[in-house]
Amino acid sequence: MENVTAVLQPEHSLISEQSVLEGYVTNCFSAEVSKVVDLSDLIEAFYKTPLFRLGRLVLSLAPFGRLHDTDITALSKGRVDRIYVWQVEARLDTQILLSAGGTKPWLMFQPLDSGTRLCFGSVLVPRPSKVEGETPKVGWFLNSLIGARLIYS
Image (cartoon, rainbow, N blue to C red; front, side, top):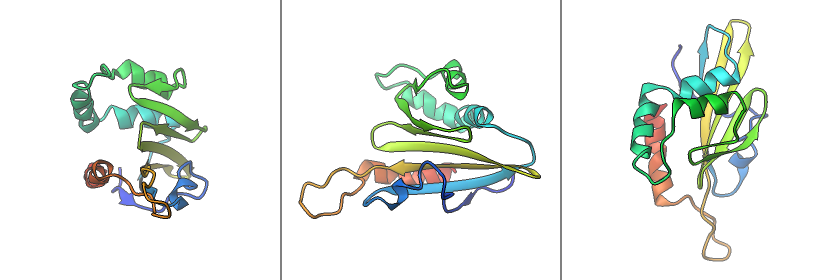
């Protein structure tokens, strides 16, 4: 795999509309691989990486139960619309947007002549403003996840 780079999200992506909403924070990363990859492959590979497995271990300490490989496979095949804390907000043939509270992870692939472009990113949803006329802002906890997301990517 080539280097992962921060890029602008594609215009037709499931996160492009949210990127222009006041207070919302989006990010998008891209990498190209020399093999043909579909959405199922991308979901499986992304959520079964060693680093994400470590994250799953930490998440298992929460009262929501555990996230298993079989759950990820069911999501990748379109057999379920919810795994662990994530609900499928939207799904197309080439991309998926999940939602869990104030975070929305997103995955997308684009076929290329020489392989596949993999895109992934997230949306951080702001809390409603308590003061009329004030711009809604992403809370401190979600804001702190931005740095971790950049390192992970």
